[in-house]
Image (cartoon, rainbow, N blue to C red):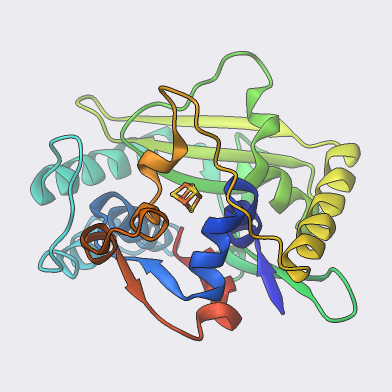
Length: 267
Ligand code: SF4
């Protein structure tokens, strides 16, 4: 079995959610505009580092999504997102703080690590390069609101960065956050992941896989007004037995269990 960060994270969020997704094959419909825009934008960034026309790449990739019945949030529209994307590419280019040598090798890099005799863990790291001259692992994020930078050191607790540091052995990590808002902004956030954090993450992976393999899938999302995670969970229709909500949010792809690691390319 091949595990990924997304799988482990699904299980830790709510084991029942993991069962819906990876054992029963229910998948969220790929019509979320923000997610598809993020993918298109990452391809535009790749074009930028390959010295191709990044704005043209963004238009091409985003145009391919236009007629997919996209679900927009926060008053977004296809045109507005395109315009923000082009502005973000301009800003990133002007800042000129990130360098990637040999972009064909150092973008979307696959790392695999054995976690037991029969299990592997796979991760796709967005890039390894330099931020302000210092070598680090880089993750791209597109969002409609700024990432919090307070309190100091907050980023070092980001579980995805800890995971990528664990699988690559690289301590210096950074997120480049492309914020789509009225005045676009690019945040360059960097931190160091410690040996202790990497060791603990390895233990967390082993422990989570043990629980998955012993079929522990009890729901424990936690009901805590006003932040009930079930209210934003795409699988709520399954848990409530509401066919209308299931049809609105999910598609079923039985047999998806073995291909769960492909989620790494999606999120
Ligand atoms: S709706 Fe709640 S209980 Fe059901 S899978 Fe989602 S988080 Fe878990």
